[in-house]
Length: 223
Image (cartoon, rainbow, N blue to C red; front, side, top):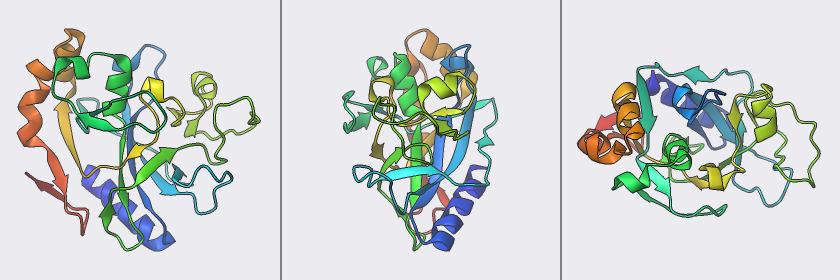
């Protein structure tokens, strides 16, 4: 399923001749983040950004619905934001204190894999927003009704499924795309996370199971 999605994203990049990829993210769930389903969303880079400051703006590809991952798994890039500013760095999760807060859980389960127009997987800055590029600031109007990515209030109201990248303090902001991920057993991950020992009891044992991608083809390879 993941491999097929990556192949589709690579085809979109080549067909549209712009950066495109797959965004992994948990959908909003009013019962809490641990109850949220994870999806793969096809995204592409805005070729004519409405605002000059959003040179790395991506949004959902029109006409393709997000793909829900099986509830038995959760996919993570095993990284967390080191700062809460809009443009922070990130580091590999190496301890329980790196994955014991909601914002860290959201961050490590939200990541993108991006392909260039030539079909090569690349390390690219990504900031996902609604199709109009509007941020969650008073200076923007509030008319956009993007049903995939949108402002927090509209997601909570049920208008859209996913928060856009305007909430760095909540684990969602501009970040680099990645070239690997780990597929976790959702129940084992959840149980260890609830005990505050997600890394020591579970994730550290998965580091050798990290799934890597061939940079030339985007095909899945294993370490």
